[in-house]
Image 1 (cartoon, helix red, strand yellow):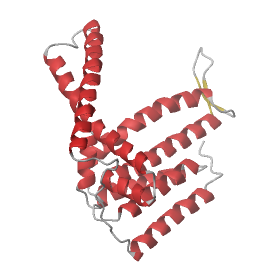
Image 2: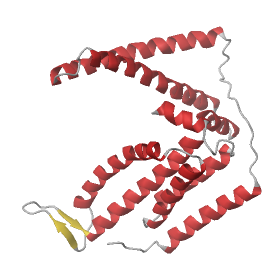
Image 3: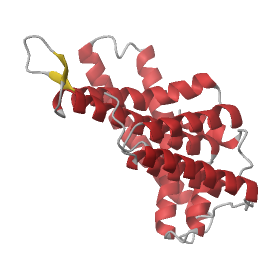
Image 4: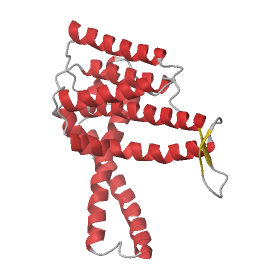
Length: 258
């Protein structure tokens, strides 16, 4: 999954767009989503970010839907709890025989949370699918973020792929040996996978340190950077879009859907 995200980030329709502008749009959209008092503005952000990802970046719709399904499924499970435990007002639904009920305030809060999650995740995927991590690290460097933090983030990001690759190889080997046939065997196989993964990751880290020392590592990792200017039209369109979303958020602040 992570490799697929990085592949799309390297080759998409918005690849030549300024990474700073894409980060500004994505982060600003996330902030507008989480601060919106009504679900209209987050849903507008979700629709516009999805349109940009599908129509401008040319990301396949099936891949994008699979990516969104992961956070939305977790959000739905959380919202079910909010529906039955939060809010007051008129009772919309009551579970027979149990002290559980859905109220109007709880339903409005659940819809708002779902819209915020959906809009925020669409904005985050807009950044992830259009901006390579190397360019993100380069922007952090230009913003004078401490070099130690950037180096740790780069190493952590690199080891994500190592962990996934090692875990996939061990898991496939266990499945071929029927290691997950029964519950008891599944628990034992998972424990062996976790132990082997820890050892292999440790060895990979030591090998990386040796390789860095052999290349005269002086405490700073090099970051390839490329400056892409932001056109006046792109900047004006961005500010117009963010201003429109902010205006919608203010105008719909007192909107109640249920």
